[in-house]
Length: 228
Image (cartoon, rainbow, N blue to C red):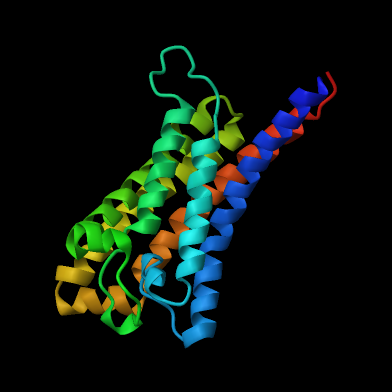
């Protein structure tokens, strides 16, 4: 293999590994850091924006967004109209939306409103946050279900599809749990809040994305090292 091309390939696999490890780390960092700083766990991943863990929340999501936008992926196969690059670019931009549009107003957080809240208003910024989160998770699920499983062996195909459908299931679960949390009867609302269901559904979706990218990166890196 040409040395320059070899460097490019290594950088390509490093992006995949970094995406996976950032996904693994994000919920752990936020939950542990939040608990150490205030002795409590927030109701959702997004709520860490309004705590001392704001820098970690915004920083990791920004890094994930940059890596997704920079990721070129493979060329579309025959009959495909949507490329890897388009899906990951849209998902990366949506990751920025999740990071920079806060989800709600937290008057007890002693933090000023964000620039986006000042520009758009609190309600519109929150709407942009939720829309960005849905687009972000949908893009990650599409990569697992439509792209990663395209050429893999049966076992790996099952792993990618399991991760993709788990992201879809958790996205729907987050939407349903959030509705009960905001508008539901007292009983289901107490279950959602007491069990921190939104937080764990979001964390599981992120971990499923991380596993898929780590497996994909590991497999392709090992394949590239085989003697030709």
